[in-house]
Length: 113
Length: 114
Image 1 (cartoon, each protein chain N blue to C red):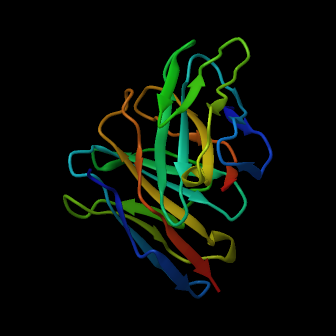
Image 2: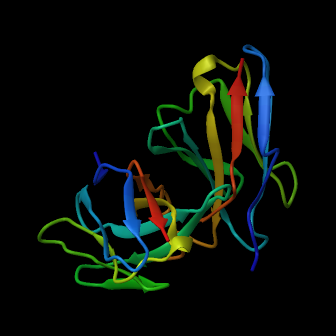
Image 3: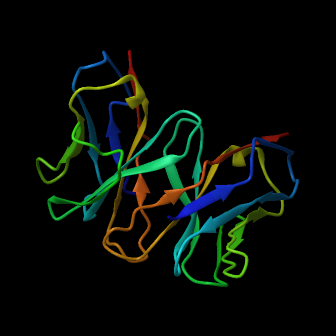
């Protein structure tokens, strides 16, 4: 079946540090890939997405590129802020009537001033 | 920006009792979902719902679970006889269609079974 694997956390960085959060997936065909973010006390918010190989999703300074050859969708940001502290989830689904999301375990990012 | 609204934010229930979790999806959305996250584990799909019927359900969604859209705005998840292992955060989501439109999530209901 489909699965998403995220690097183990938590991750603690200083403000303005470079961020990479690894995500790899196992799936047949061509899924769409997503990063969701959960800020403290809030629900899951879509951060960015990519729907086909070599697509780059970007939002709020975050980027991720859909790499079919390595089945990866790593999240990067050049300079993190304290306000980026949250839990980050990688996920996939397929276009179709039963488009359930399959999530990774999530990773907690803490950014200190 | 339109939001998915879930109530209550926290529900405490005795084991064996019935519980209903409520969701108001975004008004023009057509596809509705429930997910859950047991503490420290992955967010797991429970069920999807379209056109007043279940589209897909996971192995978790057994006979103790049911979903309903009783009117034009609410989408509910009922657990008939709760078990300790039902304790989790339950998320409702909705989307406009099933193509590339993303799912929008509510803030979740934390269900605690005593």
